[in-house]
Length: 189
Image 1 (tube, rainbow, N blue to C red):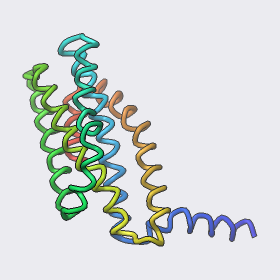
Image 2 (image 1 turned 120 degrees about the horizontal axis):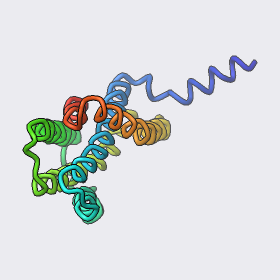
Image 3 (image 1 turned 30 degrees about the vertical axis):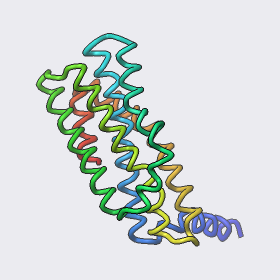
Image 4 (image 1 turned 180 degrees about the horizontal axis):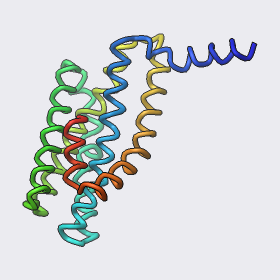
């Protein structure tokens, strides 16, 4: 009786993972979100290494999240009129290229504050397109019957990444340097 109840609960909890495309997407989402949080921590740490300034760190964070704050209400209409898969290829490719550039610049010690400001702003702009696209893309993959389950799995993945990503960022930057965090993000995008 208890075994049947647990099997039923597990079946309901992970129902949308029975859909192959969502399963692949979910694995990619988990990887990418962990990389995002690693990059957020590494970017903040990089600002402090370069400047030692809390004000500069605040400006970087403002630039990183300003596009979402200012453009969020309008992006849904843009995303709805475009092909979701292409937007996600574009945003994830952009995230990967930016992280790779940051890794190379950091490795060679060529990073300057103005560059970090530009990276933060462009990452925020890409995120502005990426977030609403992901939310509508999930519905296209799983349909209305599994949407609630898929959304809760996505929320769980994002929240888990929010705690795991900084942990990995700290361990990797202490062991291999900040450039390695950006490199991991480049390959997780």
